[in-house]
Image 1: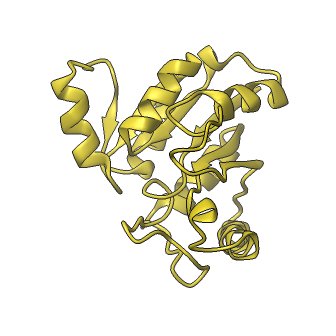
Image 2: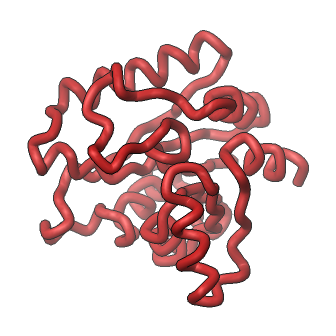
Image 3: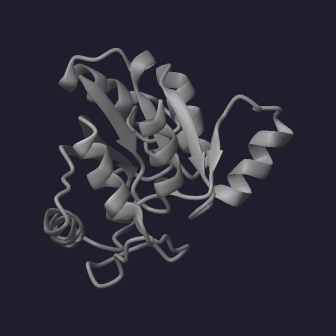
Length: 180
């Protein structure tokens, strides 16, 4: 079983410092949905792992989050793609949870749910916390420059994290994965 984990905001859809609070604000990054469909057709199970502290902060409710995910899955279905599971952390940064990235809880739960070793799983994100979550869970990390990725790349390079593959966007990362 081939499982790949994707962050949502900044990887699949455009991100905002003001948070994505509604289905109307949820706009896919060009080529990202097609990239997910290509992963599906390549035999991958695609799972999302996303911090959604906007819930804890009261910026949106579970119905709004559900509407965002329904929009995403509906658009994917139209092009022959799917998301197999969505995991999210609803907690704020000061909550003492194990699921908020960079902690590995969400990724560990995904590994258990799909009965896979995370050492065989790629996690694609756009933030330092995504990369640290992958490392903490012993998954393979990839960074995309969309979203907060350019800033994250500079921070990670300063930490001498040269072993992390960096791609312009999800479509480019998926092309590299499917060539392997």
